[in-house]
Amino acid sequence: MKQKYIVTISYVLLYILLSLSLFVDGVNAEENKGLSSEKNADEMLTDISDAKTLVEVLNATRTYQADFKQSVFRDDSVAPDVTTGRFLIHRPNHFKWHTKTDYEQVIIADGDHLWTYDPDLEQVTIQNQNVVLTNSPILLLTSSVEELVKVYDIQRIKNTLDVNELLFLLKPKENSLFESVHILIKNQNITELFLTDALGSKTSVEFFNVLRNEKIDVKEFVFETPEGTDVIDSRESF
Image (tube, rainbow, N blue to C red; front, side, top):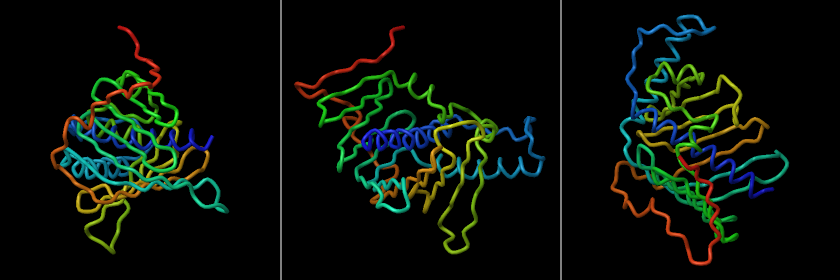
């Protein structure tokens, strides 16, 4: 059960990061378009402004590499479940999430397929990437700031202590796997995510040794199935 929970959280965090990077590739803000919302005009303009700020920061990132420490807090009375690993992303649709401690797992998106490899189980699952991501309730396949604010309430939290830090709070407007996510950006690098899921559990992911816009070997996003590994092919035929 513990392993399944950690895996689920990993997917949620990956979807958030990838959805934001997919979003900024097609962003073309048209602020004069009308939006149907229960919010008043001032609140909507604030949302659009904060969304634009977030997009502008992420738009400057083509590649991202970092070590991570993920802490899952499910009960205030017990120590968190902690895992560490390495994360790489190459916009628009490649990423690699390698958990190296506790339960080792490798998740690779190669642009066409999503590979989930569990060494302990000697098992890999293959899925069509576009199907998996499109069906995710928290994935944004949008092309404008307006679409972003239709899905999320976005707030930039002002920080007067460090002018180089930007903190954003995103809350889904519809039912989702999570209630909120805080994104901390420092010097244009994502340095921490803090997520609260629908059950009230909290997950913090801190990123270290960040490299932005450095070249990444394309082999990082190619999965070679080890000999003796069980293959579960869930790709749909078209």
